[in-house]
Amino acid sequence: MLQKVHGSAVFGVDATTITVEVNIDTGIGYHLVGLPDNAVKESSYRIAAALKNTGYKLPGKKITINMAPADLRKEGSAYDLTLAIGILAASNQIQAVNLDEFMIMGELSLDGSLQPIKGALPIAIKAREEGFKSFILPKQNAKEAAVVDNLDVYGIDNIEEVIDFFNDKRKLEPTLVDTREEFYKNLDFPEFDFADVKGQESIKRCMEIAAAGGHNIILIGPPGSGKTMLAKRLPSILPPMTLHEALETTKIHSVAGRIKEHGGLMSHRPFRSPHHTISDVALVGGGAYPQPGEISLSHNGVLFLDELPEFKRSVLEVMRQPLEDREVTISRAKFTVTYPSSFMLVASMNPSPGGYFNDPNAPVMTTPSEMQRYLGKISGPLLDRIDIHIEVTPVPFEKLSDDRKGECSVDIRQRVTNAREIQTNRFEGIPNVHYNAQMSTKQIRKYCELSGESKQLLKTAMERLNLSARAYDRILKVARTISDLEGSETVLGDHISEAIQYRSLDREGWLG
Image (cartoon, rainbow, N blue to C red; front, side, top):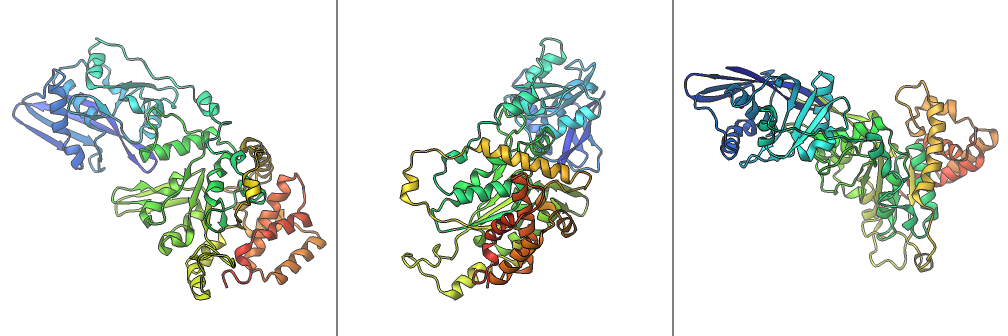
């Protein structure tokens, strides 16, 4: 007898429906075709043990299973439940009256219980698109898939529940998630809050400007000055994600299997902090079976590169194109996968290999040649994509011992959100430009007009501080953001003078 069951394969951040055709005939043998990988081929052993341990069995006949489309590679152990239900239905051990209405996925343990799968959210989205009424999957993934409306999501613990459900011996309760309530309930309680930071008022201001304009930022300072602490708090002042952004971000984390157990929609912007020993592939994504890298996992959030000069130069250079295009394309001989990667880059570095620069009391002294070699690891084109450079100094004891709390992240975020709304209205109708950091040279000329006085101020500063030509556009972009934070229509001299302070690495004596 022939029976069809539906599963799904995930490529990039999208799913493709797989039809599993099970044919049982006279004879003996188990034949699985349709480009399965080793994990799928091994499923026969898991299925046989799981069925035996739950009171059922593999029929002692010739079983032929085709996974269509047959030219698409099938990977992973998530097809175990799909194949098992197909075999049971084809051998009349379950009544499969409306089996074609179900999407079924799950990895089986030998006792019949189910293990979580990757990519539950994109599979659920595809199932709804293609008109499936229900989705049966492991209970650990149910909340994640239930984000999709107009689809009954059944989270189950073991295969026995599914068999009893199809044999009308048990009712399954669909998992229900109020997406909006889930999304908004945690927004005002960030894990890391700027209220915990003592002193560093100028750096907090700098972070606020970076968040308001979507500017990439680099923090330069000796060990223990608070660079990492400040970076970790940046997501808490970024504007809240829209439901569309949250769905997009959750999809990527779902594909990578990074959704917390029983977690639904991600409401907080991601913060990724890879170690400096990371490889090119781990950062941008890829591998034999492409997976999203750190830059895609930080989509709509923050990518923090601590100790920037310690990263391999090839790793940093490979980021240049994703920083511009806000997506990364991984090409293989048979297919191409594109992952979104629109993130804010926050980098930190010590001013010298020893960590202390121009400090007469420093425990470690650095020679000029060592300094040059250290700073030379960061290429000009990468620095070109970083708008704000700021020096972080250690906090004095008086500030550390002060009991007063700083301004909380929720209050700062309100100002940032107001500034972002101004930018959204300004760039309405311009594709791929949503905030000031994304402006092209043409748009800078249009939206950052300067008065004669402001122009003169900028000219004097560039000559006196020996600022490079690349700094000119960056200063204008940052000045535009400062004026948006103050609700000013035009870019004033005060805004220009503050923006000039945020170009430390362009000054003579830094990158030589």
